Length: 521
Ligand SMILES: *[C@@H]1O[C@H](CO)[C@@H](O)[C@H](O)[C@H]1NC(C)=O
Ligand SMILES: *[C@@H]1O[C@H](CO)[C@@H](O)[C@H](O)[C@H]1NC(C)=O
Ligand SMILES: *[C@@H]1O[C@H](CO)[C@@H](O)[C@H](O)[C@H]1NC(C)=O
Ligand SMILES: *[C@@H]1O[C@H](CO)[C@@H](O)[C@H](O)[C@H]1NC(C)=O
Image (cartoon, rainbow, N blue to C red; front, top):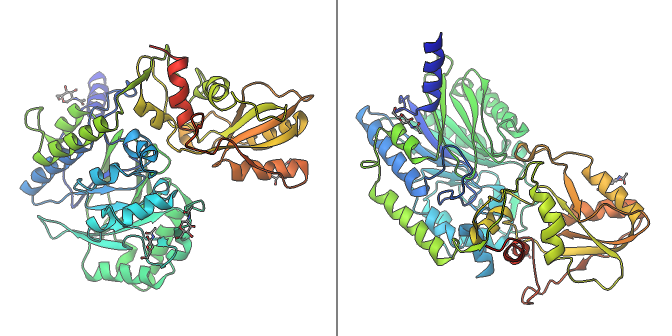
């Protein structure tokens, strides 16, 4: 019995070389620009692998696969930007999220990529990807945006689908790239509801094209939760078309999901499953299955930590044999960019951790210290008490005791939203607004335990009058809630929106400006 338990633990903790099946896939999702290694002690084992190491792991597995005439594909499920200085420090140099990182991602040997919602928040980011950076064109038809269109031309931003052919076997796969029905994308793009896309003539033709080409499986890169309604919509649509294309009834169908930043797998029917492989490059997902449409598919999946020793074990290499020329050149290009952007500059030395959870709360620090020091430090002139309300999707990463790097500013608050306010709210009305907005908890699995909105710096006094501050991302939720309470339209005032001014702060800069004073080294 003890041996059995030990064996299970060993199986779970030591990554051995995988067994190759007909279809073998490595997947990265929601990297959010964490393509350099994690430098804080935020994971066990440590996340000391970068994109160059992911490239090497892929190339090493490819040569192993070749020995058994198998094939393996490396896929990316989107959300490249927003999450580290490599993506977002450029906002302060040339105004574009992702300016420095897309050329680095372009070096990766991905076989196909999807688009994520964060890649679509700014016109300038999408225009840079499709235009001057050459990023989208560089993937030669394998940058997939099945339901994302250029709003001016109505053309797909990338391609709707692709067929990837194996190098060592006659295996090929049909791949789509879907995004959930995002309604807050920038106006340069239109995101179509997947429920409508599956009724487009091109979708049925693409399925027919795949079957005619003899593909062994259909892969749907899906920038959406593992069990998002749209996963079922897509599954039902593909299986449903078996009335016209009989092969679609039993063809292995794999959803590679993301967006909600956790690890999970679930079976959908005898021949299909859905798999989500973490976030922030904490996970290299492995999924492998047989292409036999005559007996139910066995899906073998693993979550490989982005840890070098695990990657050595998983690829049957050692520290001495693991690296590849391509991997090394990607790693050095990443490190050169990190240096150029000054991302390892130390801004402060926090005496303790602050976490997105409910104890040692980062949100308490944000509400009670960061915002009062950097946003509410100048009066509006109304004589009212300033008060700030924020949704709890705003902050993305913990503060760690010890050194606080310039890069941490972007890890914590990558979104660069400006502040605005509504003047003259009675304490009672403000309390009603806050109660209304914070009654639901944050439904994202990454932020469990937090209410949907938090405010501060102090408790609301019903006898006072307030100026209510918020950022421009939350504005479209907060202002209607205010208007519902006061019963009329309200005026929204920009707060120090002259980004050239010395005292200008946005949701990102407020950290950069207050950390050195708050946590001197
Ligand atoms: C790698 O494999 C070795 C030898 O089996 C094992 O001792 C070690 O714990 C493994 N490392 C990881 C991180 O899984
Ligand atoms: C949409 O297409 C127009 C015309 O080709 C182009 O100028 C524009 O940059 C495209 N927009 C995006 C977001 O790619
Ligand atoms: C974004 O691009 C669209 C389409 O070209 C344009 O109508 C809109 O004004 C742009 N928005 C911003 C903020 O630049
Ligand atoms: C809460 O806010 C919404 C708008 O965001 C509004 O429709 C609703 O009436 C509000 N409820 C109360 C009790 O104010």
